[in-house]
Image (cartoon, rainbow, N blue to C red):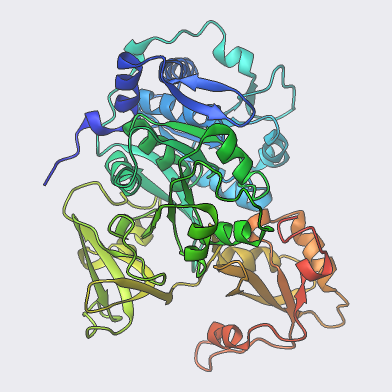
Length: 533
């Protein structure tokens, strides 16, 4: 076994690149701005010193609510040099969801972009633990809140890039807390050690080289956004950042910046395939991709755009990526790949006993290297113990494995959804829908999307004499719910199906019911806007 060393971790790798090749290009933005390894390292030290002066110390949780930008990674690296922990928030959070995650983090300091500041000030009177809000791109903010608001100018005033402040991150140190969807309860903050981040990187670095230009549009509050930066630094590559995925800008960006590798999701591939064919489709620099789940038309995508190879994988924020293809060798388009070295998995029944070969059961995972899987859920010891029972992490996902060792994802045992790469808690969807005064009961389920993964459907029982309509309910949710959680489909029912003994909603009956003629579809009712509008 090769033991992960401090020198393998992103902050130390960045410092080494900056010392050896300070003028090599590292970060580029589609707006034309760019940074070398030396400049990024210097910026991370300035952030570390500014955070220290603000009172941030080792072990502190610090909230980040920033778009995919240079500043998001400067802040993350700066926190790592201080020994503090980044708790990154989805930039779509608002209202109750934002209040819950801010308070649950126990953070006293929050870094936010000026664009998103109103989301925070709207709930500021409900934030009992937060003391300081730094507006990373704003000046002279004067919002009236109980928290102190610090402008960018004041935050960085007279700050220098002093390397003496830097604390060496260790493999067992927590590099970030990432929120993942709850099932029977609220979302949970997954504590990721630096060693786990390193093992995540290997999925990319195993198929890329030192001359890569990575195209990057994954958000920094997801593991996908962080591992691209880390893998690129490890390979001495460069990264081209677009804040969010755009199918219309994708190929222009690839050609303009000479991008050679991208990590992408199956639904995004389908969006690119849906675009009209062009005579110059194959005239691009993209050579390889990482993609999960794999779309059914992947071979056609390769042929149309001249892609040499795609690797795939299965994982979670909690466990890393224990299953992956062997390079670009795909067993078939339905397989997640094979077991990676250093991990052990079982497919088990409800009592953690292995099921017979070829049968479906829950995938459970453990690793032979310490700290390459999650260190628990922040502030939730009971949920941590439940997930880690019997010495294995329980994924909640149904799997089977064939005689050749190829693993296949079958379904989710847990009551959660995944839409356009976002994990969604049905519990949280139902909680927010249930706050409408005309809603007596509701149930959220996944229905298949034409782009792959899930769309969100809610079944709603209205109060007596209510005349609430589907468009009215959706409009009410727009003001309260993050965009990615908003239901595409709404159907009113007189009652929800229940179990006899416990009176729990029978979600399986609702899933089997599927889309009936009575289901209202936001996208059909609002052509051109899309569910996220």
